Image: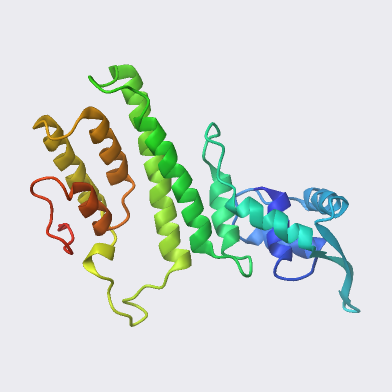
Amino acid sequence: MNVHFALLARLATGPRSGPRLRDELGTGPGGPHPPDAGQVDSALARLERAGLVEPAGSSGAEDPRPEFRITAGGWRELAGWLRTTPDPAAPLGDELVQKILLAGQVPGTDVHEVIQAHRRCLIQRMQRCTRMWPAGAGPPPGPALARYAELCRLDSVIRWLDAADGLLGRDDPVTHGGSLPPADEMLASDLDRELALAGLRDHFAAGRLSYPELDERLTAALSARTAGDLRRIMADLPGCPPRGTAPRSR
């Protein structure tokens, strides 16, 4: 847990005392190891020295403990962190999960926009992965396996972001009485993606795609969110689904 930003996110919803912050971080989402009193007090002191939080008096006679509130600088720091995409060389882990969870708690934050910023960064990393070898024969088996392992890892994080987007940023049209989206906007299933991948490999074997084109389209298919995304990838190849229809999943 990044205590620094977890505290700013809590204070973004209103002033709180150190003990209350510690209690909330211990019971809320953010990881299996909540901070102890010493960590919270030290982090608050650092945030106050940096001008990101400031004293806000106390909550009243019933609870005379001093409270803190977030400053304008703290708001800017928190908003910037939520949208800062990971370093390409750094492993993806719990901090990304924490960012999305906290984004859903900070007033005025567009969770969908935060998720999409990170999703775009991950797709770019996948695209860089597919451009590591020149046109012609495929990469050697060893490096190819390592590359595909990285692609699968990135794809799994993208799928988690898609699931988070559905849970945090959008209403379910069925349970909320709305109408279903058009066919091209229906979310693609794992089977839909697998069928697209198999079709792309068949077209490569038939000579319709070069190796760089195959790599580019495989990356796009792995990160496709909707039936329309998959249709656009296959649109100039024989046997693609008719416009406005989604691949069938069974």
